[in-house]
Image 1 (cartoon, rainbow, N blue to C red):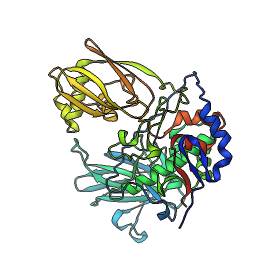
Image 2: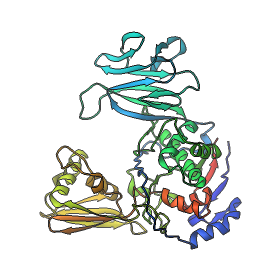
Image 3: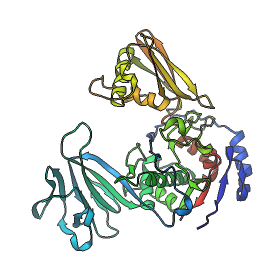
Image 4: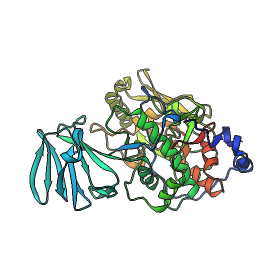
Length: 450
């Protein structure tokens, strides 16, 4: 199927093809930078780190219908309580035809032990099922509740052992249509009272990101996490504004050169964006995913400017070394810190790489996001780090002062692509979703995929 973009979004919002009617609006966007000084709460910062070694993006013309999505809603759990309707069906995942399903009265509690899953129902004796994966489903259009959160679609349970834990555990995966998933993302990612245009822009970005993740993770049993490791997800309990935005943008995706764009986004860019190729191990160095100077549109975020965060030189050295040990990085050998410098920046001067040098003269280079993760690393061997002491982004200035290290920063999250606080400010200034997306993903287009 030959699909043409509904709109081609060019650099800094210059419209082309059928988008000429946006010329005046985009001109105003470029020439007007509104700085807002009132501070309110900050959204969680998404930190997706996709693996594109096998497949970078989906060709949009190959999408013939609405995709399904697999969301990991619990990782390494030892038990779940499933409720909802008065009864549900459980079957082996590898053979889940209707004639192989077992009917259970709810509530049902499921645990796992060495010889399989243990299913306990209120009206039947415990059943041990020697399977590596189960399928749990209810009648069509019913909502299934897992530990009191409702979900559309059905649930898979996959037995697994996660690193550092010998207990018999399992992951819980929610399988559902993409358009049923997205309202739960918008519900979590944006404030309920934000503008409809912000919600529509976020819906298009989130749909695009999810489609690319689904293509990249075909060999796994899940596509995305339900946390900010991918996209935050609230399940089936989304509010009406989130549902309406998904319905109004159904099937619309961001594209670049006929491929679905991995449309990253974060809470606040702090004024300048980061390059995907810098932020993520397999991030693409393409025009829509490079960092740009966005100005002060996200100034209303309390994380637009933050700090100083104060760290002990000794404790930071221990934390960086612990991160290096876990991630098999040479910084595991770090001695007392002598200097921390920005060794490279992107085109808009946002830090791209840091170099940490110790008192022996040994230097260790870290990409900017790795430096942030290392500074925030939590491990039993290092002092517990409070939320207030965490680095909110990698766009930071580091100053050493005796035994203490002072860090000030800008923004919240990785800073690639759409800035949620900036999108909201643009929407409040009268800009619609196409213009917002053109500003944060220059050169990309919006295409009807299905």
